Length: 95
Image (cartoon, rainbow, N blue to C red; front, side, top):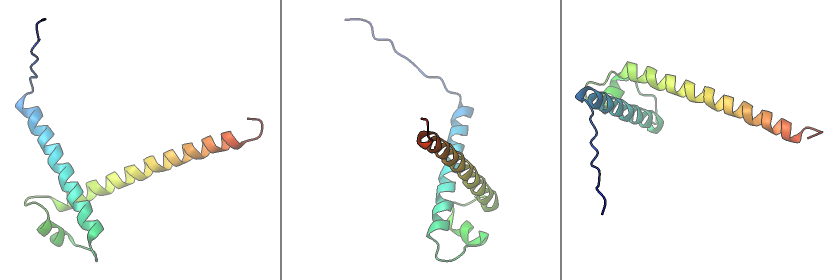
């Protein structure tokens, strides 16, 4: 039998902490989005703060969610324009 190489992965603590913070922020964004989606009526920052983990900056989280929604809409619009252009090429006479 051949030798089995052992591989170790070295990750510094700072990288692990940054990864944990990104995961935590992503989870907070999901929670915020779910709260807003499921609400029967508008929720103010105080009501949102009461339902999110302690210490969350609700205003910053709301702005981040708004930025992500805008970016997703831009990407969606670009994809739609690409699909429209492809459909016009495919259906134009002489193809």
